[in-house]
Image 1 (cartoon, rainbow, N blue to C red):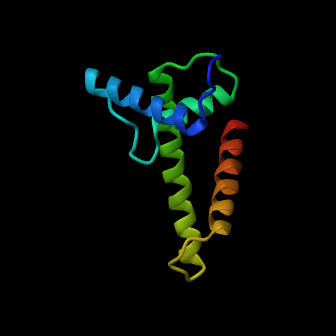
Image 2: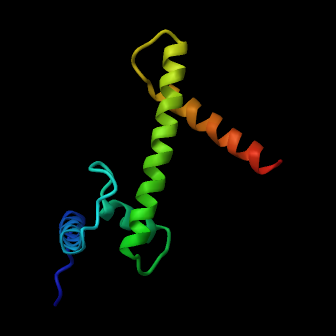
Length: 108
């Protein structure tokens, strides 16, 4: 009987696989906080049967870029409110505003 691996074991194994591939090919991780294994898991959760390393990397780059844009917008809202601390509400507003802008551009 085959033992089913826990999510932590699977994630650890996948991260080691990606790190080995990086060392073999000089391939870079997206950002230290955006692990390729996480990107792989997101794509799999969306329904993919298989995910290439380049697909996981591209998703990581896109999410990182979007995260930076959202964060910058949230910082602006916090400053506008006279605060140094970015709160969840600032991020929520930033996401909503960026999505609205994107929709406005798409409808032009």
